[in-house]
Length: 121
Length: 152
Image (cartoon, rainbow over the protein chains, first blue to last red):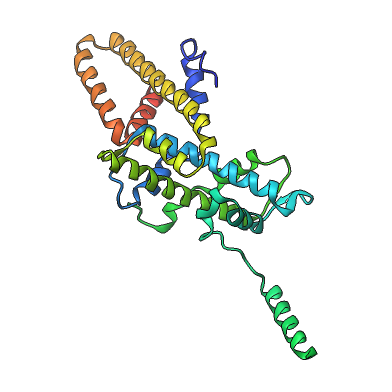
């Protein structure tokens, strides 16, 4: 970013600094502190975690979109995310909160199919 | 500690904006997908915190530092974040330094106008603020914001 300006125009620099992260640091700290082992976090670590979370959100959204089914329809759906969590190793830690969903209608259909197959015999 | 479970969620409006900026224009992101990404982000914070904390504990430190977070990213196999994170931290540190210089300058200007005898006690206040910043970044931000309001 525009580091060269920092001595010439400090006001401009501090406003661009605000745009550097958009997630609230206070909320990120609250989440971090909810972890029982954590006693204190320094300012730089807090900033880095906040920034990393933003990168993570972008990365998760973009790779789910690129791998997902919604490229033709220009959409990103839950199932794209669940698929990414399951297929991509770095996102494996998300499988608990992004479980693959099965529609009740699909489930019923597969039940019917099983019954039809049974009936064939 | 969080009082209510919703305190552990990140603000939806901000998450939505970040998603929109990451994706090509005009991509429709379902409400369910947005909620899922937001929850994933909270889990990411916890996971990163826990990894970083392991590094701090190994080094027998109580306070998480920047190195712990970067090491956590590596362990989580998000190496591609390292470079942008380092750059962002540089800019952030310069910004913090810049802000401090600005507020010091403002204080000095004010003091010259008002009362030059306050100089020493003011400087002591400044040192205290810097120390507090390590633990309580909000406290310092609030102080600075208030000052800015007064100045403007």
